[in-house]
Length: 564
Image 1 (cartoon, rainbow, N blue to C red):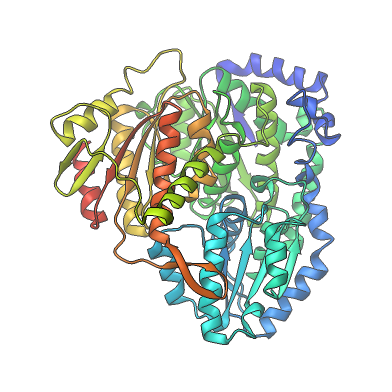
Image 2: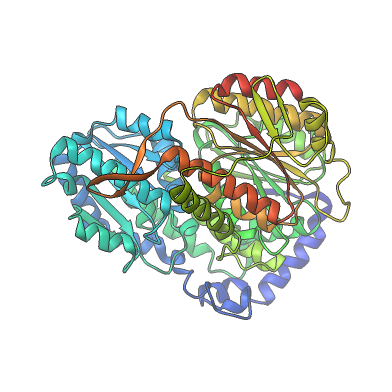
């Protein structure tokens, strides 16, 4: 690991000295809540992840026996039904390691978009699919909606007497999912350590069971992670690389460099979605926040403001982005460089950033384990769902401008879509100077597919180049379990462009597993979530426009991009 921090070197060394003097690492490992707060709530019972590598290693015999059993029983695919901390690490394992021959091909469903649900209904044969229902709380509305839908679909294919054999649960002891899984006779219930928050669960059963199913050598991954975790026990920073990054992140955030921008080489590109949730949900609250930026186009240094820390993560044998990284260093931007010997070090990388994040939180005086603003959007969405069940319709947004098939909802006065969007984005330059530099968050309640991803990437790059501002893209509702906390909890320096659409297909959500009665569909749920998040942002005085693209998303996105 290399740190290039220029003019901040002296201050960095002073904070490192403070870190060592206050014995922060020892206190963390002793589960001393006073590192972050004067109250133990959601701290002392959230540090179980420190020993996740060895705890998961102790469960490997049980996990491996289970994997062999489902392979022998003819399962070819696995579909993980989960959100946020339950889904992101398994997705990173699958996309980084691939699938070992003879093991189960894993996919993750973490979108209530009906097209996404129907895609897996149509392409995954229930007869050869294992469904992994994964939620810490055991009551996540998206996860349970997926479960009920695929339970009924599978029962219709394999019969009521066999359907339970196609489902497993990963959850906390005593959760609603544990009791549901027993009632529905699931094949297996994995009970995780309850003293681990979702975003810190990558090396617990939530990440390791799915990794084992695709044939990852999890013993090797965990052993490397355990050895690396031991380095974080050192109060001496020279022996504790995780602490060094945490101190740097926190120090730079206090100086306005609060955008941690990840530059990952191709094989490690999927790591970004996981680390994004970790940093955003841990640090974005009580008017503060460190914004993780992942997947942004790498432009020349003159296209960036002075609010960035760049992190270059690569494999030892892949230095293809070296010239671009050197350009940032030469321009005076702080840069962290991390080189992994091979992908088996991915588990250690998970741990590195977990520990770094809680150290940064110590420095900026944030409690990293709670998420006080996550519930706000859920509460509004639940009210809208209830209203729909009672009246048969959702609230309609007032439209400021309707042109070329797209409708824009905003409180900005304008005579055209172009004028409205220009006024909205121009507020970047008129923001209160006391706030951290702005960022633009694109929130896409759209189908997560290649075409939409490419169009949104083009749009974010156009905004980045024109305004020299950090940009993020999140697909809803998955980002609500990730960056959504920061959006409502930080200092209010974000501008939000929310895209919604009218579903061309839909799928009914059963009221109960095993019963076809339905009071709501996935299109209603996702629209409720979009409207709920919109209201929660407005309630927190965030700058926001909502763009209804109608039914033709590709055309709508192209039209919008032309207006920027």
